[in-house]
Amino acid sequence: MEIKFIGARIKEICHKIKKRGVSWGIKRMLANMGRWLKESTQSVFSFIADARRNGFRCAYANRSVERRFHSLIKESYYYSTLRIPAPYPVHAHIEVTSLCNLTCSMCPRANLQREQGAMSFDVFRKIIDKLALARLPNTLFLHFTGEPLLNDDLPMMIRYAKDKGVPWIKFNTNAVFLDEKKSMQIIDSGLDCLVCALEMNKEQEALLRPGADYAAVASNIEKFMKLKKKSKATKPLVKLQMLVTKENQGFKTQAYNRWKNTVDRVEFHPLHTVGGLVDDLGATNLKRSHCEQVWVSLIFLWNGDVVPCCFNHDASLRLGNILTDSFEAIWHNDFINKLREQDRVGVYSNPVCRRCMVQGASY
Image (cartoon, rainbow, N blue to C red; front, side, top):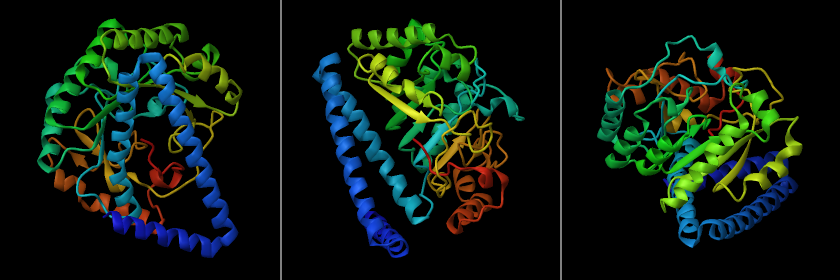
């Protein structure tokens, strides 16, 4: 598989050089070298900062979690580049709840027409057990449209999936309900990565996440890190995620300096329109590319329904239901194969794919 992947990449690069010229190829090579050097330097400084803050043991554990994640997602690049379906979902999202306590400006939940609810532990267990009959996903994300901490069974779900052998589990949270009790449950569950969403300052939090109190959320995150350190836990890796708009880019340095010595990682993500489902809001849209998701991932909704794409929030591209259909029937049915063929030729007939500007998956 890796040899085929390398061959496909070389063929793709040669085609682009032939089309755009040798000078483009040289510039691209220099840009890639510069990016690699920058990322390597940042990685070294990040490790040093981790070691100073939490000790060598924790810094090494954080690095191990990240390296394991990147090794696990590498497989998805092979299949999506070659445009062939993986034999099983390399990545899976499980929507433990579609309910949320906030009305974020960039979230399409307000437009959802499907029924809302929270996943029971029994449904979660059946999904994991059915996936295990084929092969468990390399990475499991326990979020989709809702706030995972609203499901009281979340720690038990994480532990069950880890005990079954899922290598890497993550979920995103707005951290409003990340109190001491839930924090200890999450730390003890075996979770690999926790992503806390908080904006750069209280004005941005009020604008993008109405209903969230900046000071309270910041305090929850700080307390979580103290509990993690006190319990001498090496997991989860804690990332603070902030959204970048055209209006708030000037606050990045200040926000980074505020948090760099508190959480394990600080990340800035461009705000986009969620596949065209929400208004611009000063979004910094990514360039359109081919869709990785139809080749390597599935999303399981709270009631067992399955969709192929993390931008199909309203489940209009429903593939079936994992509680009543076999995994093979869902992963290889005519509808998802049609979506794959559309991606292969670059012509999308359904409105979800046509309006989406973010076909490349972001894990």
